[in-house]
Length: 173
Image 1 (spheres, rainbow, N blue to C red):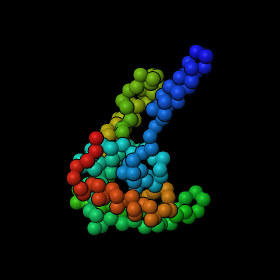
Image 2 (cartoon, one colour):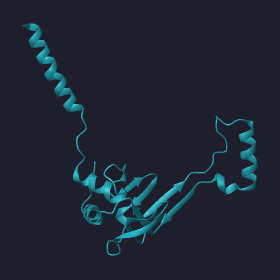
Image 3 (cartoon, rainbow, N blue to C red):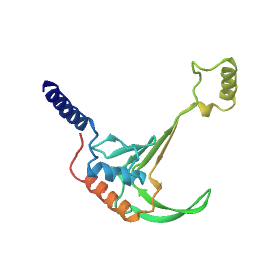
């Protein structure tokens, strides 16, 4: 009888523990931000600055707070691909300040994994093209974001959510 009670308590505790450890579904704002910037519910978006509405996607920063909402455009566009023309949603971002920024990392002068040949090759390359060893920053006030989706209605809705949130009072953690 004690064994049965112990097993029941263990099962209850295990179910409670698993329920507590399972990830909760994302909130609607996070889902809207993710879909608006990636065109997918599975995209990875990292908030950089909640108060300025700056988000990072694949190493690029989108400054949503700097977007001129009167010039925001969302349209379906034919884009060439390896399989011919495919349709994608294009989001035109425009602003007085940069709305898109990417830093391309340079080649490292040396790496602990480099052997003598690699070091010699890098030294020769640096002598011929020193710009390859300097980080390059790209900041644009006009940028077209191509999303891997054709769901224009959802992109418009989620950009509306994002714009309303970024033009309202400060939020975030």
